[in-house]
Image 1: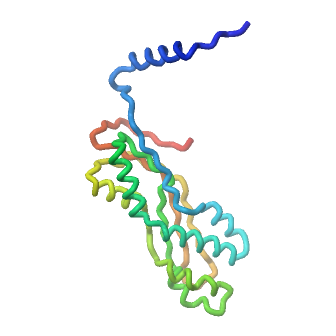
Image 2: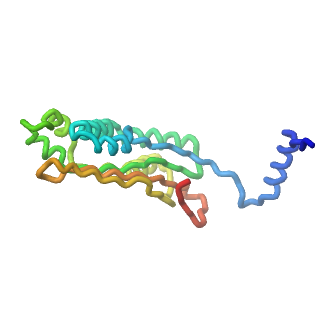
Image 3: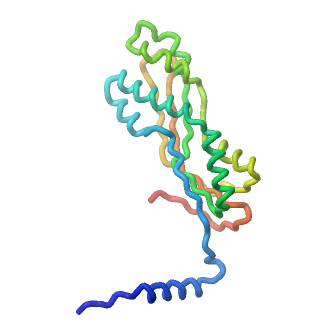
Length: 196
């Protein structure tokens, strides 16, 4: 015996009934979600580290140069502008990265005559620095008078890559996380975060 499926009209009226009985606490919310892709895949860089040193350093160097070529302030400003136009209740940012690196410029000065010499001009462009997109993004929101409070972060990736080939410490620390911000006039109860 074949079961009858509800028609679109029946399904629609059922949904309307659910919403009618939901009460004021079940008001819909508007969400702005953005993947803040860092411009390179850290997993590919990490995988390259298992190969020849030249290939590993090539992958890492390329990743850092791409990362540094990104204008994080401009990206944050564009996202803030979109948020000002959409006026969401909740802002969710995925793959929100922090990249810290040390030693590349220092070691670039004594690579001559080594197998790593081809990297010298590129590493000279990679200063010791830590770049965290979240405070940059929050500053751009504030410039437009947008008041969003950070209510949760979910750490995802935490990788430190040390390069053992040199007499001074040379490393990159890569962290990413998801973050949730809520407009300041929205009441927030208990917040729980998890991966799914």
